[in-house]
Length: 252
Image 1 (cartoon, rainbow, N blue to C red):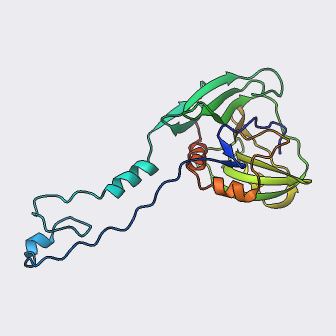
Image 2 (image 1 turned 180 degrees about the vertical axis):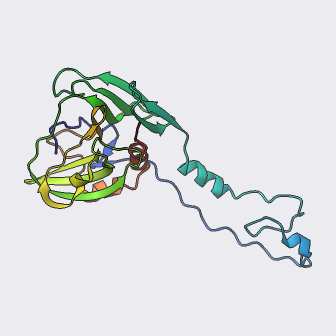
Image 3 (image 1 turned 120 degrees about the horizontal axis):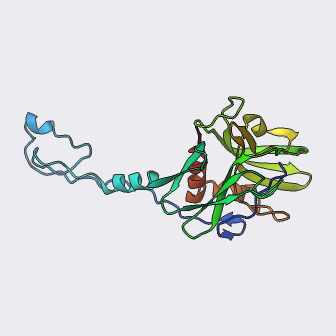
């Protein structure tokens, strides 16, 4: 892992697992009772209903199932967008979350020198994610590590200075007897699994270095009680929201 580390996790933790709301599934539609009414005329068969409903006038549209509306709201929440002052990096985030900015000081600080850092917080004011843009003269130190990638996806609207498309990654790196969890945007070569060197979370962009990472616990405590707890967190709404924010990153 790079020397520039995350600070703390900004969410409630129970037994090493971040707690979030689970979405309920939709149950099967009840079977419509058959009536003794005569078969509809050919004109009536052309109704646009897509689910079995009792006979209705062909001039009246059948109401959409409530489950469809609820599912649409769950997967398409309202979002806001944030763009850094220099206009290069932008991202979207849930409407009830907020973004605050901090200017970097000299040297390898938090945030690093020359950077503007956007700290993304949830509706309860918990700091969850940071995105630094425009950092000067920073780099990573590396050592041997055994990396397991729990999740990864390309961030299509981002390009580093070399023209590489970076990737979102949720990984655990074993260094000695300690597991280190990180959820960041990296160059793809730092998401290779197995015996390798610790990853670097710094992207070299046209306007300087950029760092995007979820705010996990600082050492010596690991972010999760174990890998099963980490995988369980991946099924939560909070994980999905954070991943969506990171995949929305764009560079202009």
